[in-house]
Image (cartoon, rainbow, N blue to C red; front, top):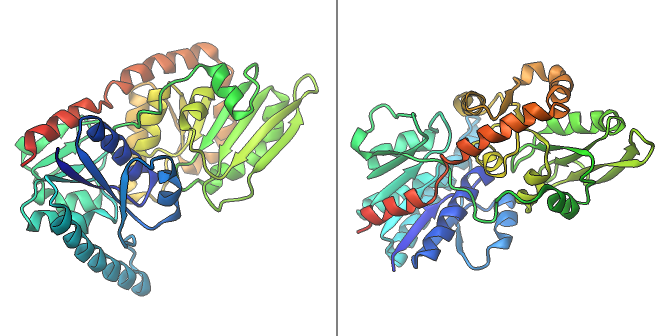
Length: 361
């Protein structure tokens, strides 16, 4: 049995694939330990996984205001020494980093103790932590077709984002029933990622009555702390109440995306992989302030693969017309779903597990 440290906290986009890999490792008889942040989103997401071991490290994202930068430096220093203690105590066979502000300290600690380091990047543009730590890595898992300047080609492997085992496509009627939705009506899911997306939340609340009148329900995951959760009923086309649901967090992603006729969301790599797994076509509105504009690159790849539509944030005024143009076109939705089945094939877990077996001590 090997011990594998997985540094993956800070956002759902880092933690979810870490959990997927951890469950795969545990199923093969290994001992995964997941390093997470102290953020609320991490605490909320791990509630369903009491069988996994989590260790919380201090950390703060990089920012350039004097106060925020000082907080970043102090927290990263604390995280490094905490990482050293974990490496010395647990004696891991491999350390895996998924990027984000929890990665650097643990990866450096692992490299100092000559533990093999693996880095996973899910986005089409590698993030700062992955770029800076790449020279320490024995293996770099990058999306198909993505390279990293300066990295040794023999250390790069094409790899998708592993999706948690519980996220599989469910029968639509069953998924709608689990969410309290009417399977006879269309469903638009607004999914701004683990942090939510204020502009998409506002759009969902503003347009709910008009969509209800056309026979479409809305299920909006607002993100923790972003508005009041609850259910609103508006008249449907035959006068029956039609629901719009607002939830601050969703830990039943399989049901959510399986119920969706169309998703409106940001373009994080996790969202894209989960939409592919559940065959949920999407209108993606990339977060315009994402580092290196990586969400736009993700969305462009998703569209090139035929999974949906890209709508830039600056054209948000066109969102209603764009959604209507897809939502009620069943042939177009079916074509998107067929393409998503092929895209899902890029997100294999077994290839990552097999590769880890080749590089353990």
